[in-house]
Image (cartoon, rainbow over all chains, first blue to last red; front, top):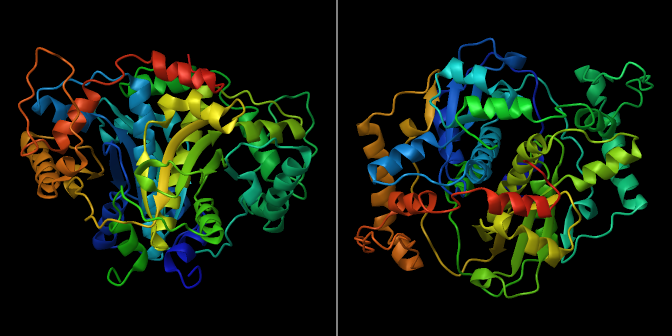
Length: 253
Length: 253
């Protein structure tokens, strides 16, 4: 039952693709991907998908999707029904971010089923104002994530993930002792190093503190060091993200 | 190429299931579902999955998953690497909610490929403190969504979704004129009414304002009325959700 499952096979084979051929996916395929995305179990369909095929897209991809949290459409519909939205913006975003994320993940999987590769560009929220201008977004639409897509020009193996006992907990969240943490780190770090992942990407995050020496080379710079440098150095205060949200008409303060 | 695509077929066939048989999915299937969920394109694997098979689960389902935003594991890993997380909590949640949502959607699709139905229970964030106690969650873990799963004891058609021209916008977000809004509302409302969706669910949301009369019966109460009553009546202020976040160790104020 677990074998010969095309769905599982497609999903387990997922990896981000950062090099694409010139071949353009057809309109039919694009619409099928978005239509399939739509069948996710949404709370309120609080999403919109922006598409650009204008070129100059990262990694030479033919398609750039921007998946947005969209409360503008909801307000338009409610207005027609004689209702006014009163829910606070944090609760709206809590549902809307999920809706947009479900859409994006479905699009990744649907695309993969047609042989398309993809890669998330995660910085959209911090460039929201710029994206709003580019696509002429109305208020109450927030660009959550960008996704490039196209036919892969590279072959990559799937990246490692945490071990099962670091992820799935029955009945109770366990104490994560040193052994468990070390084991999870080892799986991730050795897995990424074996693939020369950051070296091929030239993806090392610099250490901002001038007094600290960067002792790592691509021989030992791996996943847990990489994410530590992200969460240990980026966006210490919320000013920037709050401003971007505000520019898009969401007030969470 | 678009035909005979098992992945697309499985995803387009998705609908929430609210009645389950007694049959228990095997450990092998459960682990395969979670493992497949893990292959989503995560930023930082900021997720954990709690499982309960204790029974008393909604709709008679044998499995209850609670998918959490988990920054606790990240902090443990960073500590081992000599780093301290400095990123603001809004930015953490913005990524973590996406990570947990990707995981949950992958689990839905992976489950479906094994013949399992599922249904999201969306209220988890508002019951976060209670769930924290139930599963003994450490700080910095926030239960985002619950998902019941099992073998379906009902056959349902997929629910309608917005028309493509209300969802996919190329290059520019268009002016949504009355025609477009009315058409989208019509597709949703007529689609749900044709399935007697809310009547079978007995799912009407009452009007809170005593002075307003509820003119709708299940003959004409449909999707846009339902969601208008949600967003037009629920959680006017953010106090409750902020308190739940705070109980779980996230401070977004």
